[in-house]
Each structure stands twice: as structure tokens, then as C-alpha cells.
Image (cartoon, rainbow, N blue to C red; front, side, top):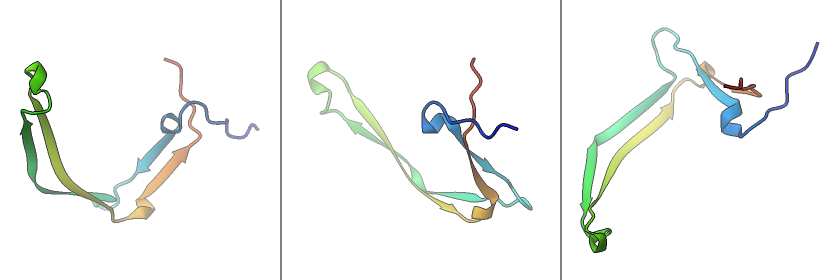
Length: 80
């Protein structure tokens, strides 16, 4: 029996986060504070006549149930 294959590619491409929902409760909660703020900046690109718009969202993330999370590593990606 062969062991697990050596990871190839970037770490982002060979890892995945597996989540489960036990009893209808999510393992991760995301809180949004306020709305998305749209900021108009007429000065950054003023020389070329452009307008820059920036969006700002204030959010918070917490892991409430770490037992429901599993990091899978060493995944082999199939060639497309």
C-alpha cells in the first residue's frame, strides 16, 4: 500500500478546510458591523480625470466549534 502523495503546487492549492454542521449550528460565525461604506476619492486619479471609489466593510469572525473543522492537506489536484 502506498502512503500519501507528496503535495505539489502552492500550499493554497493543496489544502482544503472541511466543515460540518452538527445540529444546525455552524462552526464559524461572521458578524458585520454596520453597512458597507462607499468612499469617493476624487483626488487620487484627478490628473487623468478618473475617480476612485473604495468600499470598506467592518466584519469579525469567530470559530465557535473548532471540533467541526478539519484541515485536509496533501490533496492531489487532477489535471484539467
